[in-house]
Every structure is written in structure tokens, then in C-alpha cells.
Image 1 (cartoon, rainbow, N blue to C red):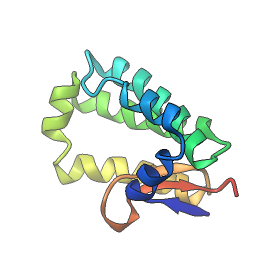
Image 2 (cartoon, rainbow, N blue to C red):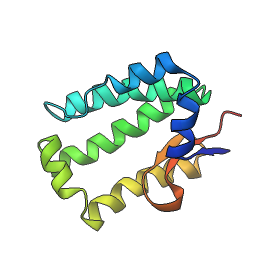
Image 3 (tube, rainbow, N blue to C red):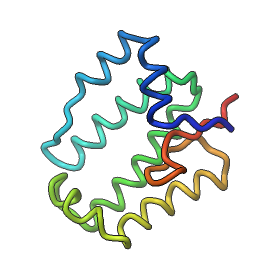
Image 4 (tube, rainbow, N blue to C red):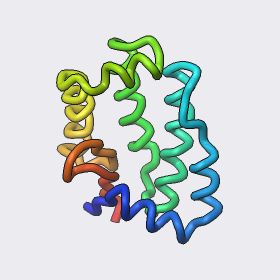
Length: 122
């Protein structure tokens, strides 16, 4: 397993300027949660290429599970941003990441020293 911190990912992206520009051109605000998922799936593809991950589908599947949870507690991106700081909601998203970790599937962690992308491909 290789963990790519957000800082390491940023550094690696400098060696892939076309992918970096493509990533940065993705919207940072979203019209609704479905739009957020659509853009995030595109970002998963780009990030997987940057780090050499062969399993972007696993990253996208995790994001779909995360979004399914978010849709149970929020109707919009803005509403989720307001609620996401609640320990219950953060814990639910972390629990999804832990399920991927246990199954040794490529995934993201969001908080603390675990933050980054965990890749099991290499």
C-alpha cells in the first residue's frame, strides 16, 4: 500500500502539467449533489493517472458511497458544507473510508495524519 498525502499529490501533479490544468479547471462549487459527484468522478480519474493508480473505479465507488450518505443529510453542496463539521457526519464518511481500507481497495482518507489517497495497486 502506498499513501499519497495531499502535499505529495500536489508535487507529483507538477510532473503532469496537462492533468494538473485539467484538474484545476474542474468547478469548485456545484449546482447540486449529483453535479458534485459527476465532477468528483472526473477528479478521481485525473488523480489516479497522476499517482499511477490502476483502480480509479474504486476511488469513484467510494465517492458514490460518500455522496449517498451526504444525500441523506443535505439537499445541496452548501448545506453539506455547513453540516460536514458535525462529528457524526465526519465519522460516517470516515467509516466508509475504513471499509475500503479493510478490503485493501484504493480510497481517500480526509482527516488527520491519514489524509490522502491510499493506493493498493503497486
